[in-house]
Image 1 (spheres, rainbow, N blue to C red):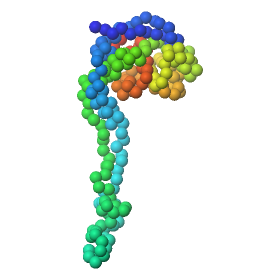
Image 2 (image 1 turned 180 degrees about the vertical axis):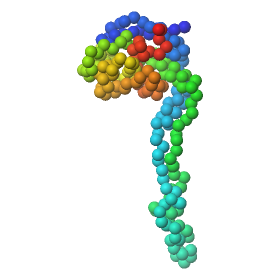
Image 3 (image 1 turned 90 degrees about the vertical axis):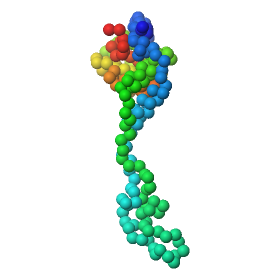
Image 4 (image 1 turned 90 degrees about the horizontal axis):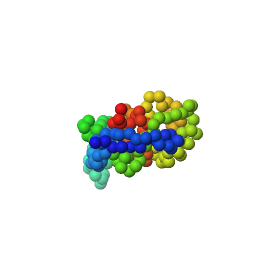
Length: 205
């Protein structure tokens, strides 16, 4: 079976319909899988360069600070101990890779869940094609107003859409993605997801 989506023009008109794969746009969103994949994406973005010095790496402090007895104070063996001011850090962070392994099937299911969620919430728009003669932010804003797009909008741009990309890229709240970059996190973070007939995954060819 297929899911039918309306196709619109960039000035807000209608341009027919398109049938897309139900397995990609018509499933029940799998929330646990979305959570797993989004968490993995955010973890992979972490640089993991944080680092602290252990007591072995702190400079100085090797000598015993004072005698074992006679001071009335608790015995101390080194100024580098974690409880001493300027000492090392116990169990502190060290450089590490935060990347998590996610199976390809799980990633595809998360993408289909995110796309289906946008269809069910009526937050997915398909444009027949972009017709920008020259890049103008003013024209991009006019097109968004005609399509009633507001908030965070993700435009999926294809080859030959350079003028459209330049018309939208400076608008606050707008993100541009190539079709190959489409992912669950960016979809879920958007208020609107906008495809063209050429960039729509699973569309009738």
